[in-house]
Image: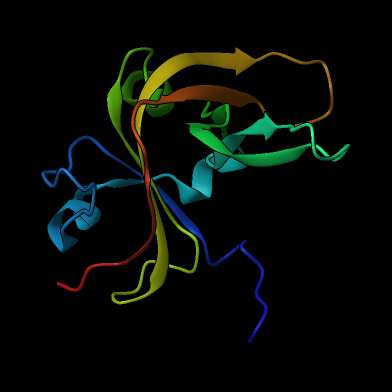
Length: 156
C-alpha cells in the first residue's frame, strides 16, 4: 500500500445541490461544484463520532460498551481571505445549505475515498490577528444528515 501526502492530492469542493437522496453526486454535479482546495488553509472535523453506551453488569468489575448514536464532529474550513474578492463571505454566508465534498484520494473518475457531507453554514467570520500570517476566514458547518463516506468518484 502506497502512502501519500494529502496536500496536492485531496480536493475540497462545495456543491449547492445533489439530486440523489443518497448524496452521491453525478459527474456533472461534481464538475459544477466550486473547488475551494487552493483557498483552504485548515480543515477541522468532517468525521463521524460514536457515543458509546456503557453496559455494566453485576457479573464483572469490567464496564463493557456497545455502539450508540452517531453524530458529526464540529466541522470547519479555514480559508485564506482575498483582499479584493469576497467569494467566501458571499458564497458561504451564514445559513447557506449545500454539500461539502472531500475527495481524499483525488478527483479522478473511479477513485475511492469521496466523502459527501450535507451542511448548513453555521457561521462565517474573519479571523482577526496581529500575528505575522495571512488573513483568514473561518467557516463553521453544521452537518445536517448522515454523510456519504468512502464513495467512488463518478465517471462522466
